[in-house]
Image 1 (cartoon, rainbow, N blue to C red):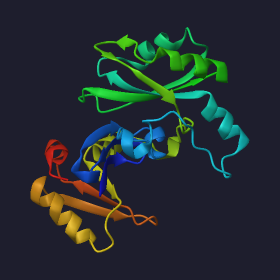
Image 2: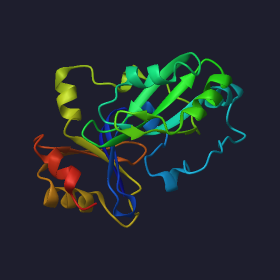
Image 3: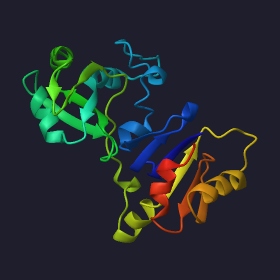
Image 4: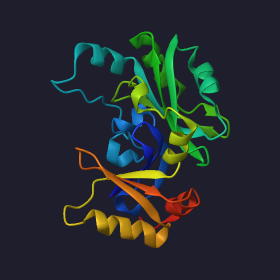
Amino acid sequence: MIVHHGLPQYGYVADAADNGFVLQANSPVSVNGNSTRRKKNGYSHAKRRMNSQTSMAQREEIMRTVYVSDIDQQVTEEQLAALFISCGQVVDCRVCGDPNSVLRFAFIEFMDEEGARNALGMAGTVLGFYPVRVLPSKTAIAPVNPTFLPRSEDEREICSRTIYCTNIDKKVTQADVKLFFETFCGEVCGCICLKSKVPYFIFRTISSMPLFRRCPL
């Protein structure tokens, strides 16, 4: 089961596969299926994956984008972009990761493919306390859809105590998942199921979120 904290484009993502547990900022990039689990997302090698449904524009964006991992938690997007500006003009930089985690990852898009190729040579450069890893990206950076973002403080507060779950076994019911989270995290006061059949669970209080991050997924 994969559990996400917050709305699909606002909050965090927790990958609970194989009982591993990783939190990452759920930017639009991460919604597209990126994960810090290198063996599962294939970032352990440097090939880009593009199929027949990938448009020419998307292919060009992907070829101009690199995936950067092992980013120190203190490093900002501005600092990361500044590190790669010597490789070429940076047009977008998205750092993903729980601010409280030790390492995060990012996607950097350049104006042209040459910038992305030059960026691969930055692998091993120490930024903060750790050497970064740089590989060709397998996805373009998705634009932020403002309709998915909270529009008020009340909505932001609800997002902060909301999770959504995917990759749930067909034999597991919503009631089973709700009971699981209430057992380990606290009272669930709401459950929403969209057309995609991805259930959202809303905890009664924000105090359940630290427990959620430590629950045995």
